[in-house]
Image (cartoon, rainbow, N blue to C red; front, side, top):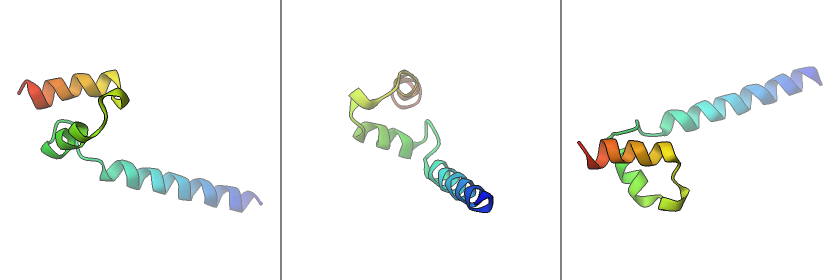
Length: 58
């Protein structure tokens, strides 16, 4: 049972790393395009500030 729990944690960790690794770098052209498509109501304050800094005010 202990081995199964550890294996599950490793799988979850690997999935998280893959998801984060696939995200474009903040401020890149791809990131700006992704943010344009994301509803403004779903943006965090940090995302809004980064968008303004990197995508609007260059």
